[in-house]
Length: 466
Image (cartoon, rainbow, N blue to C red; front, top):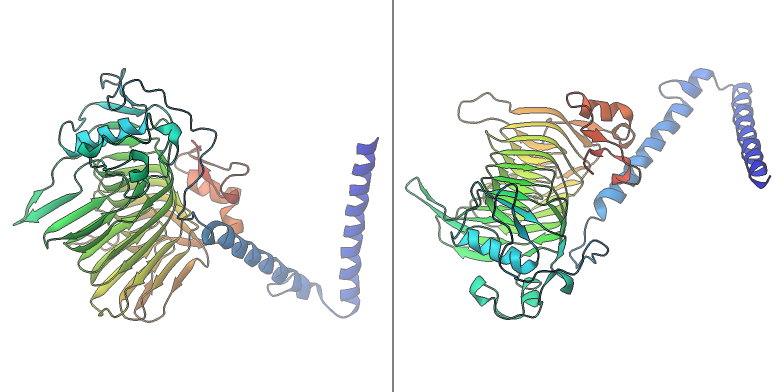
């Protein structure tokens, strides 16, 4: 009976509201306000609807973009369990698809990384899996968080303490040289890494490199990937690698340079770096892609201080090279490029919500992240809500392939001088991007790849596996 009274009261309120609206319209008409003035292109009701949408956009920007992930320890609860690893540092399994190597502790992850970096094993044609979620800041994820016998792997002191101060040493050789057109790269990953949807919390990579003029630096959980990486989730990662001297710097949370395939992965946290000369590629998920990235998203915030030469900065990927393919991805992190004070005009910066520079193929992608450049009117900047620059080079056609790429309106912020706003990608309102029509656009070539999920991503589309 009580429930029936509530329904009756709601119905009465609804009828009262409708009657009020009708009364107001009648009074306006009697006062000389025409139906056209109410409902026309510039009518009162039309303008009210526009104001409503603008408010929704502003709220979306506030909720999705300004907060981001703080550079602090994320408290992982629930899915982080005490490791049960009787032989830490020795991967269980034989490395086959049917019997993969299993990473059961942070000690296992460190030894796996060291095996790749030192060339003990590239894991080519082998399979490696996470056995559980790991948190670098939780005692549960270590067999012994206070062990001090890992100096041979580059960790001097109590293991957990070192990992949360000096940071994790990436998987694969970090520095390589380019001399007389001969590339000397070192030891990299060629295997199959399966995250199984487990999460890696509070991964910290912190390197300060002062190197010679022909040196390249790759920084990410994986420095370079020539195999497959799938179902890896990095929560509250932080990569703050910086470089002075040298030629190129590549910084991403998951992978610096991708030549293989990455799928069903995501990153959250922060990527921040500075590069004072030559070039750099920086992205929340991947710095530079020459392989395939599909069904991934980024929620990490990307901040780059730069000067001199060309910088490519993207929410998801810094640069998508001519062989790169990116499909069904999105970005909700915000991106900020900042020219270092006192620098010259010999600087070109390409900034995008999804990709800084695309010279390959990208399809079915969107960004709702803020994209900002602070260049003090000195550097030449190309900036886009989706893609900073979409162009092929070396005599190839002028336009790279960017299909079904979108971004949230009013998310681009740049100085007027020396700045070009990219036309790669289509601007849409918050209401449009939360509509069934937008979901259908993303799904038109691959029905079911995208969906809406209640309570997730503030009402914007997410991928089928989320």
